[in-house]
Amino acid sequence: MGYKKIYEEYIGQTVPLDFHVHHMDGNHENNDINNLIAIPKELHEFLHSIRYIISFPIYKELGEAREKLIKQELEYWKIFKDCQHRLFEDS
Ligand SMILES: [Zn+2]
Image 1 (cartoon, rainbow, N blue to C red):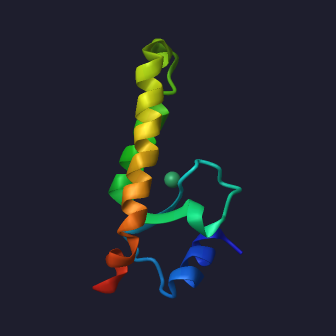
Image 2 (cartoon, helix red, strand yellow):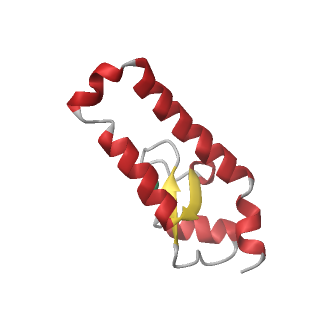
Image 3 (cartoon, rainbow, N blue to C red):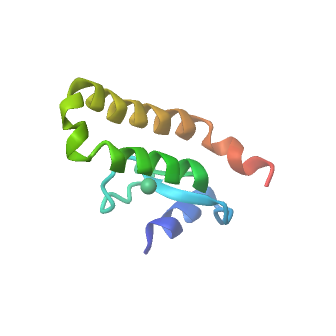
């Protein structure tokens, strides 16, 4: 079963078209429900582009600051995960 289906089965609804299901730990093999989160697709694309950009060699020298950004991203997921249930109440 695909991860989107796993997620939809868990929440008992289909994910709205303008939402994406994301793997919080970045591991696409980890389809554990605690690792999946539905977020607006714009936010998803934005956060993935940051992750992509900071992987460029020119940003390697950022060192600790770069690590901080990656950790911060995980914090975002946790915050959105906490209010996840509200996303689907009104739809
Ligand atoms: Zn993602």
